[in-house]
Amino acid sequence: MLSEKEKSLIMLLELPHRISNPRAMMQACEDAAAIIKRQDAVIEGLVGISKPKRARNSNGTLKADDPATLENEAWEGGKAPKKKAKKS
Image (cartoon, rainbow, N blue to C red; front, side, top):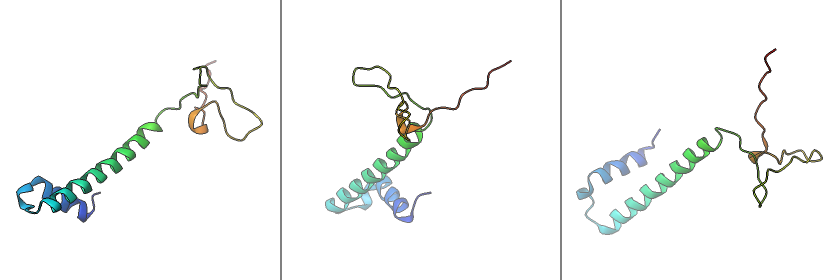
């Protein structure tokens, strides 16, 4: 899952005494921060698609869908949840 570059970065940050140059240490920290931000964005993306959420107007009321458009404005992301089957 991690690339070789990321694995070596983790190794260097686990043993900071191996980086004697302050500039190299700063670069390693910047690289680690970039990796963390990228992984955070991936996690946020996965969490964001778990449940559909109703879209709201600026005053907090629910938006209605405009049937003249292709996109469903009533739901964030344009996808409504599937309807549950009724029991008879």
